[in-house]
Image (cartoon, rainbow, N blue to C red):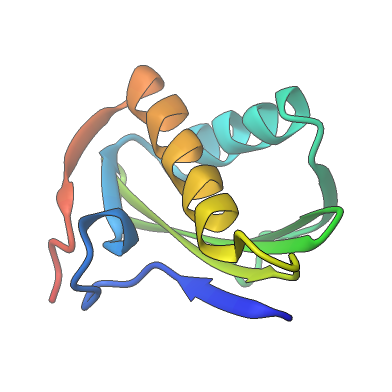
Amino acid sequence: MAKIFETSEHATEVILQTHYYKTSYEKLKNCYLEALERLHIKVVSIDDNYLEIFAEQPHMAIQAKIIEQTPVETSIDFYINAEYIWGNKKKAYGFIQTMYEILEKNFELKGLSLHK
């Protein structure tokens, strides 16, 4: 059964709140792409016009939206379609948490849901 998980400005759970980093669009995008490669997640497409990256692994499709608010403030949100028999939430949240940990090792976290 498929289940959708999405991060956003108005999420009540901390893990699902938009994360803002002190970096540019290009640097955050490149770090995210490197992380996907290390995790053996296939990049399907990169759309710099709409600031979206589509990736997939078995049973999970991932859309990342990266928005440069200012040259030193960039946010990332995820839209995940998980299709596991059980453990949808655990696997989707695991992916989100892993990505945030990788990004926070490379960039300063400015805050969560800064532009409600």
